[in-house]
Image (cartoon, rainbow, N blue to C red; front, side):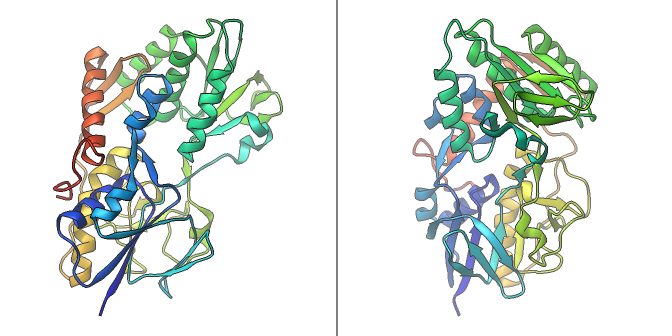
Length: 376
């Protein structure tokens, strides 16, 4: 009996699954990759592209040849519904996609409820294709006489990197560009060590980026903070973190109080064993785990192994992150902050390290490299 296996979402974790299938096809299965876009933008290089360091083609991974080598049909559509009891997905193209085994890596959605009043001034990080097109158009409209104000909402790693990237991109065009980073009540870089925060604060100050603390609400002229202060802005980039897609809450799949897919160390749903999940769409029930592209990438080989094991009913592997992971934060101008455990430092050497790691990762899944052998 042929088993229907679906990868929903072109997230980073699913790259390792496709590589695993390319290396050793799954017998007795039909395979499908369902994703909204044919291209995956590697998140680690996006700030570097925004800063003008990378070309678009250097961070985009074409999923079509990867799906073909994995023997998977590529379906370009968004997931808009899930019925785990009947084992079907509802797609934006109107199709109902049945499955015997499902892996979800569609990612979360950006929380923009408070920023809706901005209208066209608001720029979301996702979808990345829209971000890249609109940021390019915004930069092209600037000139030496421009005085643009760009605000980034979100004090996490993404917000810090995007603020520094925006400054690097605009400084050579308009010296009077003003970049403002809005940091929430949790402070700058929550979850990072004091040394990393100190280095980031110094980098922001040295590059003339203004930092405001408070909760921001969208206004027709910019951002209104909860202290009543109005910050005019020509463009506001939302780096407010992910919330769960609305269709999850309606699915009947076991979810956490915040609405994300609940999984254990084996990345399997405790309520529906035919469903696995990874990346920003999950929350672990056995331990807290920071939302990070590092975990999406590192969990990929475990996800691949467990999907294969689930088909033959053999024991699953746990994804157990290392106690300390290498964190690399781009500063927008060929400098970076590197941290490992209690160590933290910054400089060109950290950027060189980040650039080497990022380029090597992308090359594994593009024409410049090979996806084969990356599933283990």
